[in-house]
Image 1 (cartoon, rainbow, N blue to C red):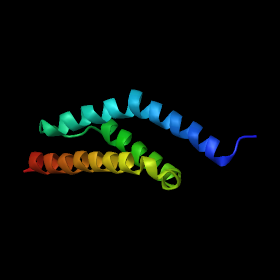
Image 2: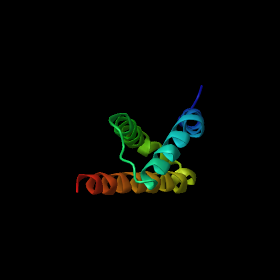
Image 3: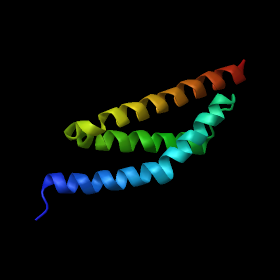
Length: 95
């Protein structure tokens, strides 16, 4: 029978695959977009909202696996950079 650790390993594997193939490429595209002074679309904001929802749902998983906490912290920092820059761009465009 699979224990909690084996279940965690399976979930982490799926999350890492999703990060590598879906999330990270899209997030890096958003970073380029805001770094170039663009604002985020409603679609972009919906995507980020979903990312934040998912992150809050798996927080306890990463709490149980400290070896992934550095990666999680880096991702949170990247998301924060994007949202801060997006807000700055939005405010600049309104002036």
